[in-house]
Length: 227
Length: 225
Image (spheres, rainbow over the protein chains, first blue to last red):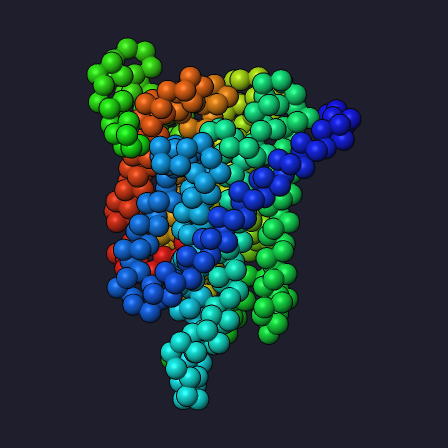
């Protein structure tokens, strides 16, 4: 580890970090914007969801590098290629969560809203989506963390990101550079993840602080009845 | 020309089907480079997941591993090892195994831990030993999720073995990495399409497998991803 390398290349490292953040965050956000209508439709018309899920499973099986390559003829060796590919993967993780979140809204809650005179659209926006927010944000977290990590692969097709530190470090046999790249990618992903946790807490003040672990209700042990 | 026409032209060119580095050879190599890490990861992840799911001890660790796993840049991990110890068996095998364990571990854990407590009580109530409860009740019920874990890891390993070509591994990734290095889009597109086909075949294989091995009583249930 050569610590002095870090400050003397600070400007480059900062530039690559910003590029990597951009390539990771933008796809997750676009993914969210596209996932909401898709998920709402899939949650509402049930027959629509199984085919969507099959498509999602197949797309998600496509290696990211292969998808980058498939997009090169259309978009070249550019940011756009990486962003479109990562948006597609983000969609795959967010849509199922939108559907699961909306379906988990208890029927009595929906019925109460209807009884109070809420129309379908108002009910969706003011009742169902806020209640589904924690699950949707859980999907967004997975989307943003994977996008940031996969964005570093963009370097293989020449799109600048923290992946540059890996490739340059390999060519120069210089582990310090690779360590810096690894730490920054992971740190960037964890910071974005943390921000989303805070966003979720701000958006859903009624939720307890504990995150995502569903509390499994303790089922009372049945007392054996003797004949 | 589009991606598919480039890929198709390259795949159907007969020169790529003979000699050293031919498509059949690299395909078999790719299967080997993916299969071995998957097997080792399964041998680690399945027993560990069952043990943690059954006892409930270590569950916090599993959840955190699952979250951190996605943030690890695979390329960086592979390159770091290649720089530190040079290219060898360990350089590609270790990262692939390490990265393939978490999806298996997490899904096996979720599957076993998520078995209905009433069912577990019933198993205990009819006099099953701890071992019988695990092997005859909890594992069969968890099987759909166990297969999801194996499938996720398999797809992940196929993709990562492609990237490992960058540090010198053989397999289909060779076409992509060598093609990129020499600015030839034909082999890049062809290699990418073959990798995609392989991944889809893996997906289909697991879909078939789950039909064959999941107990009849569990079929048609919704599987959590």
